[in-house]
Length: 404
Image 1 (cartoon, helix red, strand yellow):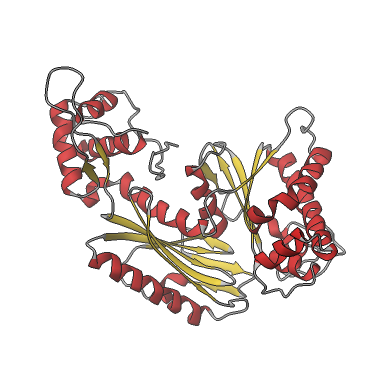
Image 2 (cartoon, rainbow, N blue to C red):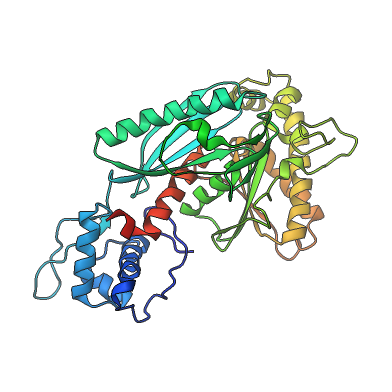
C-alpha cells in the first residue's frame, strides 16, 4: 500500500514505479493516475521534472497531464522555487485544498456524526449530534443523519467544493457488496438497507463497519504496517490490517472481538450469547462496574480512576484482564505483533495497559521471543468518520480521469 504525505492512501498501481509507462492513447488515464500518485505519495512537493523522473514518462507528457490535474483541481501549483542550476524556477505541486472532498458518516450508539475531508487530509467541516440510539428505529435515525449530511454538502458546495461521495460507518456486520447491514446488536438493527434511508439522492454512498474504517484512519500515523485495531464504545470492534491493507475474511465480517466469549457462565450479551468480552470491557460494563450511570461521559470514569476509587479501579482491572485474554487468543491465532487500542481504550490505556500486557505475556506462546506491542490510537475520537472520508478520496485518486 502506498502512503501519501497528506494521509490519503491508495492501492499499489498496476504499472510498477520506474517501469516504462504506457504510451497508447487507450491508456492515457493510467498515466494520469501515475502522475497523481507520484505527487500524493511524495513526502515533499515534486516539480514536473521530478514527476517525469519518478514515473518514467516524458516531460512533455507529464506537463500535459499535470495541467489536466490542476485544471480539475486535484493538484495545485505552489510558488516557484529557484533552481540550483541555470534555468527556470521549479514549480512544486501539491494536493489541492478545498476542491474535491469526501464525506464520512457514522451512526454510533450515542451520537450521529458527519465529517468533510479534502485532498490534503484536512477536516473541512465536522458535526456530531449526541443521542441515545440503542434499540432505535433505523427509519428514524438514518434520515436524521442524512439531513445532517445534506447540511454539510450544501455548505461545501456553496464554497465551491465537489463532494465525491460518502462512506457510512455502522457498528455491526456489513455486507459491503450489497450495502446491507446484517445485524448491529447494540443499535438493535438487523437486515437494514441504510443507503436509501439517508435520502442523499444520487450521491455515491458505501457502507462499512466502523472499526474497519477507524483502522484505516490509523494508517496516516506512526504505526506498524500490520496491526490489530480494537475500538471500544458500548460494543467492541476490531479490524486486522496486513501490510497496510484490511484483511476482511471471506465475507468481510471478521473483527467482532466484542463477541468473543471470555466466560461461558458470564452475563447474557445483546447478541444472545453469554460472557462476551463487551460484557466485561465495553463502555457500559465499565460504567456499571464503577458504580456510574451507563450514559455518563467517559471523563467521569477517568476522574474516578484518578481519585483511586475502588469500584472504578476494580472495573478497569477486570476489563483489562478480559481484554488481555481475548487479545492473547487472537494473537496466537493470527500472529500479529502490534495492537492499537482506540475509542474509549485510548483514554483508558494508562489504567488498562499493565493488565493487558500481563495477560499477553502469560498466554501468547511467542511472547518470550517477540513481545506484543500495545499502543494508543492516534486518529482521534471520530476515527471512523475520518477513515470513511479518506476512503472516498482514495477512490477519487485511483481514477483521477473521472474528475478532470
